[in-house]
Picture 1 (cartoon, rainbow, N blue to C red):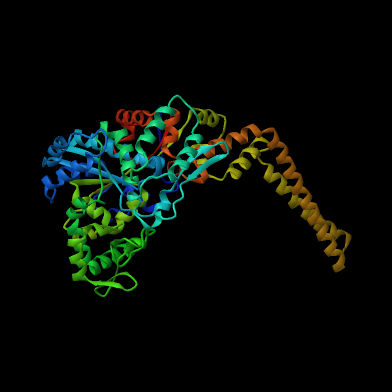
Picture 2 (cartoon, rainbow, N blue to C red):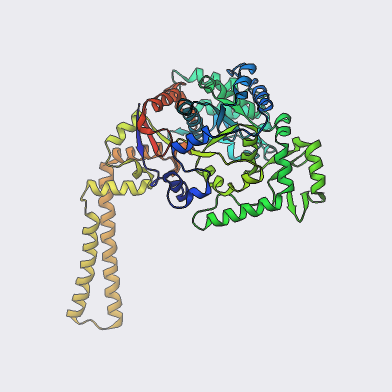
Length: 541
């Protein structure tokens, strides 16, 4: 296994992300600290948990007791109760069969950083995966991508009623079986297929919720590396987060104004990631599912005909706290209220919306955690490496359209200046036609028009000749152009980053269930990658 570093800037990441990673401009003012390892260590060593450690420790221990491989509840409680223990968290929507590669990259990142920080700070740093069990956009997680014979194949799990409910609470039923079978049939049979399918069947068992299935899979894969799980969509966590719900009610106007001011300031130089709404809260309704609580002039609207005063809503937050859930800005607040969390590991989109919400933390008497970029990587299979070796392109070149890569290659295989020569031919043809018209003395408008049409037709014929010439070269180089297509599809499927398109189970099936353990071990040995992920990794398998 060989790991090479590539700059982020040529890749399809935002300017905000690139500036944050590199510490450029005034971007650091939108975050608690600059993106460097010393600042992360400072965040860990200076962290003080403001909540009740015993209550938090018992809550997290009970939550993890339902997942395989986790430490005994009393041992985990003792670890979390220790004043020197902090967490570093990441999180993700509850995707099918674990989701795309970036899910596993987040997990690897938080484990890798926790290990380094424990070694370098003298504090016990526990890696946490926050199960985003209150997200409700089922459509975003209802498919996975697997490489097929003709590019990327997508497998969709239809569910007409799922859009109204939080994805984590949806139960795996018989409708999942068709999706399951389609995915398994698409996986190429290997020495690792039986073990992988057994693991997936065990995790995504009928009758289990998607949250529990997703958590089960992660726990089976990474509990030996010290990873623990957390979430907020259950009564005990709701009670612990009740203070956040109340503050979101009583300070709704001020919080909205602070978000708008920060976002307006940020948007002067960067794209605004999340649009600001008048409330941070949703309500779980038995009939309508998850609906946004709208706030206007001290009145809260749940749906047409149903409204509350702030006092009434505060009362409901006491008696029915399980019906409230956070939006994208309140979720990190609840997470950092429940956990002794010194840092959060996120992707480019998360880093962008954290930049909008720094002032929100003050309303909840919290300090914004250090925001660390997750690992970003492209996996290169041996067959793809061999094909790359036969082609004249660098890694970043494959972001271009296949047609552009093909044309570039074909031109260089024939005469490298073929475009120039054909353009010169057309130009000289036009100049010759104008010269002959003048010498012959053609002045009649009709004849001039006919002359121009003749020149235009001849120019077209030259273009056709060029096209035929390129086609002849293309036929001779068909093997190479197929290689270009194969490499591009592997590195940038659908013209997107591989980590966002391909399910990580594809690589486990092909290279072993221990593949990502081997990557973790390589990261710990390879000092060139540095503790923080400041560059894109190209990993040759």
